[in-house]
Amino acid sequence: LVADDEPVHLYNVIKQDHGLEKALDQYLMEKARSAIQNMQRVKIAADIGNTDRTVGTMLSNLVSKNYGERGLPENTIKIRLTGSAGQSLGAFLAPGIHIDVVGDTNDYLGKGLSGGTIAVFPDEHFSLKTKANEQQITGNVCFYGATRGEAYVRGVAGVRHMYVVLPE
Image 1 (cartoon, rainbow, N blue to C red):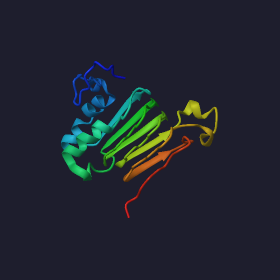
Image 2 (image 1 turned 90 degrees about the vertical axis):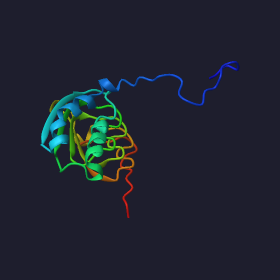
Image 3 (image 1 turned 60 degrees about the vertical axis):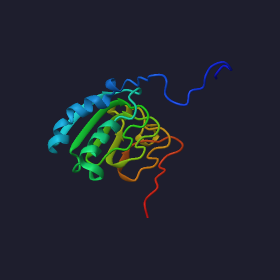
Image 4 (image 1 turned 135 degrees about the vertical axis):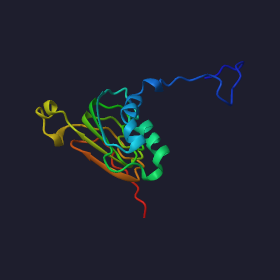
């Protein structure tokens, strides 16, 4: 709400700090440097928490800037994340990037998937409690706007999922 005597600005007047320098993608981009520069295969392991959102998106942007739509060869960058991922994990994931999540993910998994691969499966200790087909492992609206790539989810997704529009 704006008070009657306050001016309404039509442009950015307040500097925003989104904390991108602390994003998990910064670590992933550093570890994937040789893959991006020389197409060398790399494997990266990291923990993930539900405040880590859009993981893989900045890395995908870097791949796209360097290699365009074709991306990298399949599985050039293999990432294994352990924990509970925040929203939009793997959003716009580029070709050549493969993300495994041992744990669970939040809403918008694989939003706009663009050629990469995502696999989500439960932690071995969690799966001892219930069957995989009874475990809520990802949130709602998975793969919305995806155009290509692969995804594997071992468990139950939220109420609304798998909205994919395929080109004719």
